[in-house]
Image (cartoon, rainbow, N blue to C red; front, side):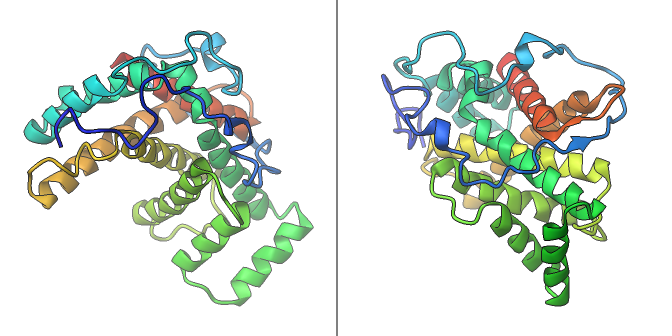
Length: 288
């Protein structure tokens, strides 16, 4: 696809935030998003993205700036990503994602507000699994026992967990969250085949939260840029390889941001950690 192709997302003059955004996460069971997560090791090099403070604001806070999308909001992102597909250049990839966040989504703070459901999904998944591990909620204990008694496979168990947290869905964001949770758990099993989803360590839970955010960011790029990869006249295998490179880049940045969000001397609520990781990652993308 060339740079003139239309986006499947909102176009020029449309609001950055759709009118249903405030209710987008209502279909996610977030009762356990405030469960604390222990601090992790401080990353050896802290980078130059957000520190604790105003950049790690609650993503539901309306960011300053124009509420309407500018003309050609995705043009630069499409052009850079088209170049990336042709050349495999990491600089084209970074420029494309940077423009996607800065111009396409109105900057990192507005992007974090728009993608708040990603942090809700990650923290809800993490808090639920921590509670299941600790056996601190009788209703979850009963549910976990019923799942174990059915002798389900790891994949089937993952689907049950996602269904438990997002039973109905409805909005595009909730559908994306369901997809991201499912892929995050599958990725965890790829990385750690012997992982027990009902007995994860805090580090594994943090990784799973990061994977959820990363897959949701990746989904968002695909959703908003629409056909940017599909109409390019390259072999499907090449396009899939390039998509894999996009996901790898997103995963590295989000994992790093999750490490930074967990750094410190005291446990913090998973919702707070997920919000901070999402904001930091989007800032890194915008500034790359």
